[in-house]
Each structure stands twice: as C-alpha cells, then as structure tokens.
Length: 226
Ligand code: HEM
Image 1: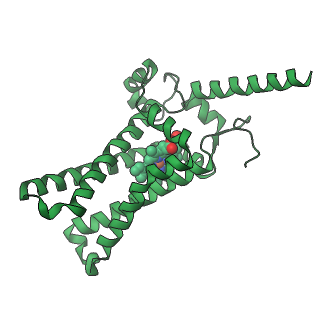
Image 2: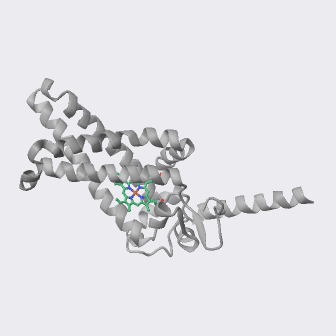
Image 3: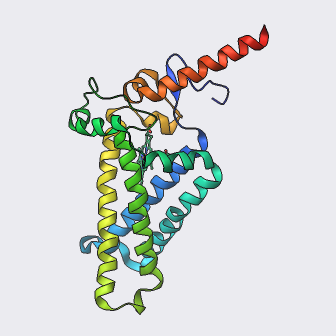
C-alpha cells in the first residue's frame, strides 16, 4: 500500500497508518471506559463488578484514553495539528451544509454545498470529542485523586459533569457510526483508502485540491524530463 499514490482513478488515500492506529487506540479505550463505567454506575450490572476489577479496568482505559493526544502528537504532528485547526474552522459552505443537515442525514447529497477534507458535521463531531474528552478527563482525575478532600455538593457536581459528558460522547458515537456506514467511510480507517466517487460526493473541495496537486506534480515531472 505504501507505494500507491494518494489519488487513483477509483480510490483516495484518506488516512495513513499512524492516525489509523491512534484512532483505534481512541475508539478501544473509549469503549473500555464506557463498558467498565456502565458496570460501576448501573446497579443492575453491579454483580459484574465483584472484586473491584471494573474499577481497575476503568483506570487502565483512562490512562490509554489520556495518552491519545500525546501519542497523536508524537506519531503524526502535522495530522494532529490539522485535526485541531480544521475542527474549529468553519466557512460559509459549512454553515450552508448545516442548514441542509437533515437531508444529508437521510443520505441525500445532491444539493449539499461542496466540502473540504472534513465536512461540517465531522468538524462539529471532532471538536465536540475534544471538548467533551477534556471535561471527562478533568472530572475523572478529580474523582481519582482529590475526591475525599471535596465537600459533598462539589463531589456530586464532579460526578454529574463526568457522567453527562460521557453520555454526550456516547450519543455522538451513535451518530459517528451511523454516518460511517451510510457514507461508506469505514475503509478509510481500516485500509486507509475510500472509494473516489464517495470521496467526491462528500469532500468535493478536498478531492479537487488533491487533483490539482497531482496535476502540478505531473507537470513538474514532465518539465524536469524535457
Ligand atoms: C468504535 C467504532 C468506531 C468506528 C467504526 C469509527 C469510524 C471512524 C471513521 C471511518 C473515521 C474516518 C472518517 C473520515 O473519513 O474522515 C473516523 C474518524 C474519527 N473518529 Fe471514529 N470511529 C469509531 C469510534 C470513535 C470514538 C469512540 C471516537 C471518540 C471518542 C471517535 C472519534 C473520531 C475522530 C476524532 C476522528 C477523526 C480522526 C482524525 O482525523 O485523525 N471514533 N472514525
């Protein structure tokens, strides 16, 4: 795969290996936190928590989850920066895209404004993941290390913030999975490539940029040969 070009007739490189590994780390640690957290929180599942292993597993998940931004930074600094900047930068097409969100949600892309590498919904999702994760990590660390020194009402607030942030991130995950399958994006995170037609449908501006870059590179190569 390493020798394949970013842009083919039929496929486009969406994610290289390192961001895919970071995403797998994020997704698996989140699922571990969610499942072990449910066992801790939900009385109906508390029988599974015997021996305190879920509390231990929850902390293992938390350490991996907290390591994700650092691993991303060291493994693929440009990718991490791009993700942070792109997720919080919206243009006019993004606002027009939001207006047509419901049509897009039901699989209609015909009149959607052209989108860049991330569509407006992905930007919103990724930005929310960053902010909610920060809230989960901060409240989680307080619970882990400082809980006994807090008064009862502050303790209750920390728990509420932690649980609501986790709930919001779980609801976002449902949407994330829905769009992954409706718009056939999964292969971008498994093999790294997505179908070029799907890419054009969802990220037309980005594909146009890639095409221009490829054309410029080809022209440069021809000039060098002459
Ligand atoms: C568990 C199953 C999951 C699947 C199948 C999945 C699938 C995907 C796919 C296909 C993409 C690439 C979309 C594109 O083409 O741009 C993606 C990106 C992303 N996902 Fe997930 N995801 C999962 C879990 C999660 C979870 C739990 C989170 C957050 C807690 C998450 C956060 C993200 C973020 C932030 C990106 C952007 C990554 C980057 O640009 O480096 N995902 N996901």
